[in-house]
Image (cartoon, rainbow, N blue to C red; front, side):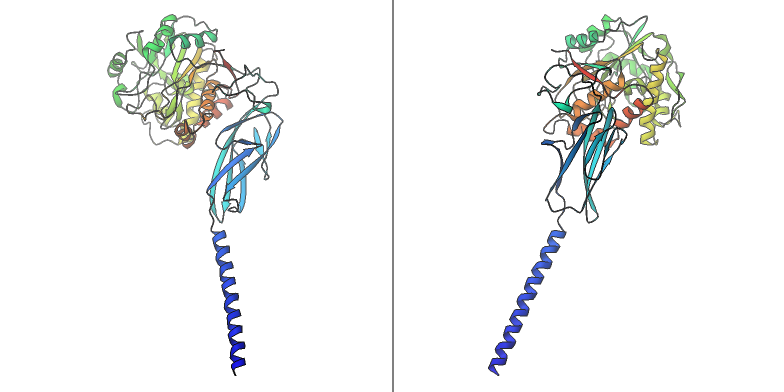
Length: 443
């Protein structure tokens, strides 16, 4: 009897031990199965390209590696390029640079139906390199191999880091452009009380050297610049009337100019005085924007030169001349590109207009905001080009290439508004080229 009890006890003990092992195994598997993805990073070679720009030459291939923490928290990795004709990527993470241009590649990790994504931006240049000097715009070492600068034969974008009157004059002179006839200088007079408009003392010498008239149009959203009288008072209060004459171009209404082959617009409405000027020098403060993602040269010649009704027309994607609100976001972004193209076409197919962007006070908010967020990144410089698309793309690239979180808020603003669509559409319709040669004039 005692022997039988001992045997039964041993069997019971063994069963309990087996159950404990099985239970522990199940708990372990469940714990492993419940692991979530904490972070994703993308490597090309030894370079971390997560949320940054990587340059490749046409025809080249590269393999990217996805690093996940924790390493066993993955079921499936997928890749997607928003422009496969520029950069394609297969299911193994192999990148192929097909033609010049820019593409955003998104990497998504799927863990039991829960997805987490990150991205990298690929800039594809041609086979001939136009590298100038031994440093990048940010002052780092010269990249090697397919990390080099832009190609020869592409539009030049001139850059100085000196944000002062002398720097502005120098970058303008690099354009080797002489305006003819009556010269308009397009800028934003800035919304009171505290927007980041261009300092009149910064631009005084340049504006007076071309004998320019500062031109603007009234707003379509209220504020202190919704009527001509109020707008002129703002121009005076902000110091612009002290350095040049100021013309609110839609004081007497609009003029209509054609949009050729537009997807959203067939006509564009600019200020009635637009036609009174022979040449346009466009001075833009590059910054973020609550709707467009960012504002630079293209926005300045589209929304900026549009009359009050023209602003409604662009914002609504060509559906209303009285209501600026309620339009579809992508329609608005594409309409800006088309309105800008109409302006360039009217001015001798771009021969009578030139562009300068000042990259200081880089807030996520526009100069049309009287209470903008404080900038959380350093000033970069002044850039100029005959190509507004190349100029804005260069500015965007400089924002994306900042390190240690500097400019992260502005990158997020651009991405969250799909802001790059404006430049993509502008390139598609022939306003300009997103591939460019950056020329550092400080050397």
